Amino acid sequence: MDRNQATGLILFAAVILVYSFFFASSPEIPEAETATPTQTESIKSSAEGQPAATQTAVNDSTLDATRIAKYGALASMTVGEEETLTLENDLVQLKISSKGAQVKKVVLKEYKSWNMEPLELFNEESSKMDFIIESKNGPLDLNDLYFTSSLEESQNEEGINIQTLTLRSGTENGQIIQSFTLADGSYQITKSFEIDRFEGTFTGNVLALTWEDHLIAQEKNLAESRRQTKLNYYTSSGSFDNLGAGNDLEQEIISEPVKWVSFSQRFFSAAMIADTDFQNVTISQSTPEADSAIVRTMVTSLSIPLQDGKAGFTYYFGPDQYNTLKKVTEGFEDNVDMGYFFVSWVNKYIIVNLFAFLEKFFTNYGVIIIIIVFLIKLALFPLTYKSYIGMAKMRVIKPEIDELKEKYGDDATKMQQEQMKLFSKLGVSPISGCLPMVLQMPFLFAMFFFFPNAIELRQESFLWATDLSTYDTFFNLPFTIPFYGSHVSLFTLLMTVSQIIYTHFNNQLTTATGPMKNLGYIMPVMFMFILNSYPAGLSFYYFVSNMVTFGQQALIKLFVDDDKIRAKVEESKAKNVNKKKSKFQQKLEDAMKAADNTRKK
Image (cartoon, rainbow, N blue to C red):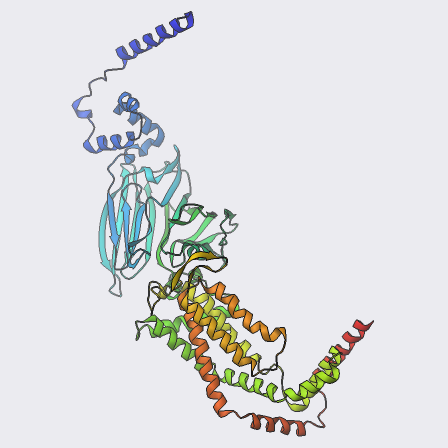
């Protein structure tokens, strides 16, 4: 043993001796100063997770001194025993902690998760909220305070039962009051925050919130859930926006005040709605790579302005049902993606209301889809009829068009000019068959957005499909086909076959040739790959729509005679022999001639 080692041992022994003599035995505490059971429990709770030696060495008076140094006049409010409180109505159940007065768990009573467990929208393991307010001792996290609770029940003017859970924490200098109010038949929970007195203790004029939520997977098809999951927000100026649905980390600092922020999954949302507005809002989202139990991780930080020490906002924990969200606040229904502006009106004003009406009379959603198809097809029948007549006219004048092709086939410009003259002479419009079909397109595209977001179809079965809100698995493949998947959706196959038959039938009615004629066969096959993993309700709708269209065209064919159409064409031909060109026709011909001259040069 060298000199340095010996010196070290002697000093170490001296330290132990001095510590044992002066600090090992605590001074006897007078009986009046003995901590109450509640304080003892709190101190014990605070010491959990610390090394055993530290817990033994640090006594009650040291902890109290540390607590006072950190919290000042609020130190006694950080001592208590945590309780879990329940606030619920017929739709939602909340578990609220008396420590911090924070929501620990939200259960939606009318819904189940994909594995038929109670649907927890979030819980204390997946979600965390930190409310911070500035004090003269530094930032104060409300989660450090213990509250006492009281529950009151009342009724509003409409006779609806209302529950209010009030939590208070304070000293002789003042108190902090937080309350949660929940009415029967509502998914909205109103929260209020108030600082009563405590003059000079709090220095901030905002309540700062950081909310991090690891969204629990509620649907079996995780890929579809992630595609439909977004962090949405609505500004006080009336602008709706969101972070995209990509898997990469996305962050944004919102430059203007925000009215509400929503963590919106495919069918459910957890949101905060300001009484006035939220300030200094930042949002971010990311997608876990490995954890299949989490859809996305979303985070928002924001400031809630305090007016005379008071603030308020509203939680929404509930389904993404369009008519329900529309009643919450301005723009909140945008949490349901109804499609682009040129098709969203179909869903918002027609399909949603049709579903709500038919739900009163039918419980089977497959039957409801069939009825909706019939109603839409009936409303659009005049367009379908005009489309058929337009294609029939083009079919009966096919010989004249073929003559022009033989005569001017090598000169495309001349061919177009002569075709326009022929159409004008015969009183036939080349777009008469296409335009009615184009006017029907908003309904076809609207369904592409409606069914993936229709919570009405969630866990509803029909025929072999156990859930119309996701794909129907007729049988599983032992391998995966790129862009198709490892399962076969029978509704998608039926839709594809019916679309191919429909295309073949239409090709007999039109004059289309070459690539344009074959394109109609390629599109159904492409959609088979796309829709194989889409909701069964969507494929079933398209299949039924095709079948009804077959019936409509067969019915029209019974009453439409090609000879009569030819007679009308000849009548128009005789009537238009001396008809002058319209200004539009003349300008079109001049433009075509100019284009041809430019091409030749």
